[in-house]
Length: 570
Image 1 (cartoon, rainbow, N blue to C red):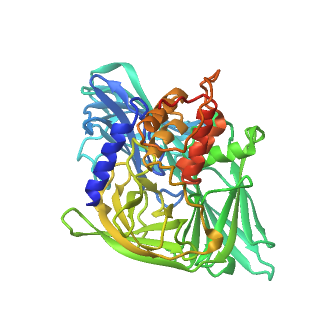
Image 2 (image 1 turned 45 degrees about the horizontal axis):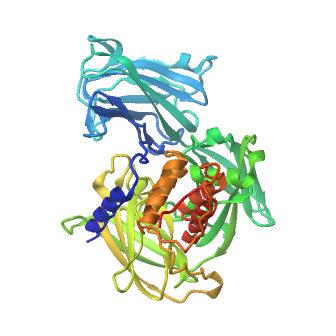
Image 3 (image 1 turned 60 degrees about the horizontal axis):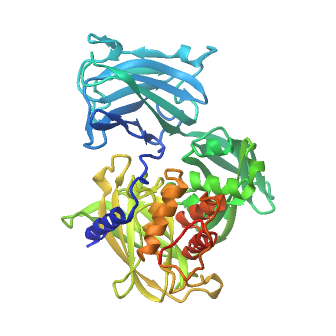
């Protein structure tokens, strides 16, 4: 049933999405990234970069595999006989550059980090292993067994030894395709791609409590070195900062800023069961951007800051242009009181109803209930009770009458599924009444390739009570209806992948065809400009992220109608 539900969902999106607003962009992963495709003959070809191990931490491994795949996105097939020019950059500095040849379009390179480079140019410390291919002058090649995901220890692959992955942060992998389908077929125009991978680095800190107890804290940074670590005894908060460019042009390029704070559970304010608030540059971040992991370590809580591009834009919007010249990102982690949560667990099955090695836990704070947006925490465990990282999933919620309450397949129409980097995710779901609800969960896979090992379908039955009056969310007007999938269309515009005119046209179509139902709204005269005010985009982005109600988005649409920027035909 769930499979058909999602299939129908995608069909509906296809019917009502205005042509030309679907982007061909992909987000950066921790250890993997895919570049937008380029046209090559009758193909749409791109490069995908992926590290093994996927979550790479400086100093923990003596070597890593960097896989670069060149393939047609329309068929998911590799191009063969490819000459790659590969460059590795960090912080604007070149670390490696060389030509490589591969017969099957999947290039695997063994990266051997080398500490202690004394050269002025770090690239001068880098050495390369392999033999020049006879048909691809200058390109390194290793004869032998082709590489797969299962034989990286013994397969034939060239090597790069140098100051690569010796420091945490964001690395740029630039790839130029100089020849394809034949080693002698040199492309008239290079196909150039940039992908980005993050490498983690742990920094150790120590602070003293009021009674002189020493507490060790580890900050695991995926972006840049952190500094100015402080502990405030007045509220038990932890703060630190790191270099960051808040210029809007740069912020628009950043997909994710990821920091981890590891604190012993024995320190009472950070004990298991505690909740937290997070702040960036003094602005409180959304609940989804601050995740607590008490599962990975018996004696340590891990609190993740997962600051997405939309969250960064919200912070910039809140602080204004004065923040654009700021070169620091300030973090603050504030512990709150403990919360008694209810939870339910269930396992997933595949299409043949066989159990897969995935257990899903859904938990929620009992103070929330009917007629409220309830923050449900979704947690995904493997067969060893370890969190499943980099998972993509979707859900549909039904009431006792089997009527759909809510659904979510992610807000990127080019990449299906909600991404949970750490295997934990928080979704706010409005539940209109008391009684039982059913949450159907579908795990689509893990990683950029949607690895199906943990894919499957399962359901949970949850009893919803009246909730605490202090947390009640006002109900949406019965005259206001907006399907959840509209967020796809709005999100494309917010991300800058469609114009104001295309967004206006799409919303006009949806209103005129009663797909979006809004309260009666007086139309203003034609506006002198069709430019949508910047605050409308900001408001829409907040709504797309689930941080505001449908009513707030409807109010923004009504403003466009009242100002004459949007005209609705009756």
